[in-house]
Length: 180
Image 1: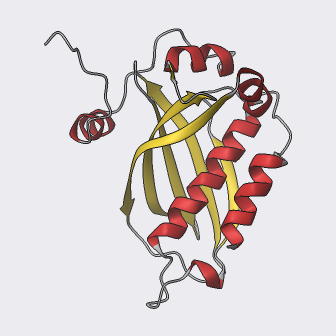
Image 2: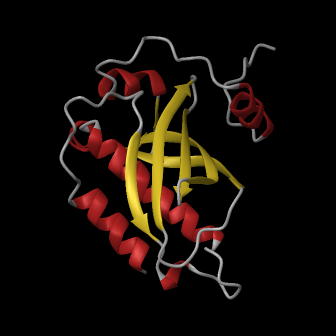
């Protein structure tokens, strides 16, 4: 419940825009591992990682001034697919830095990377394929989202890292040529 309240605050009362922050710049969110994040084995529950990532993405949007722009158009983000890789466990009361950044986009989705570090060590990495929808549920083209949010973003997406491109194809979120 704590993470849901944290997400509600990050989304409904977002932090101030960082004027020097562009769409391709990383955004950091500092979190603390709470008892409610732990499972019965005293590890952070995998669902808690996903909720922390939700908070990180809301803070990312706040940092680039995205909430007002999206709200004006009636657009909102949804997760199309996500995957996690865990390296080290997060411990109770750890101070966690979650770094969120846009890796690129195609005709279907925007790709984000979210990295967890604690005690100056890499702990986990999440990949997210995100879509934007209109109030009526229609999909918004990622190029339109980039044009709206990416004051400094290039017209074309940066090349995705090989592992991200392979994952996107494997889970069928990547753009595919329908003529092929």
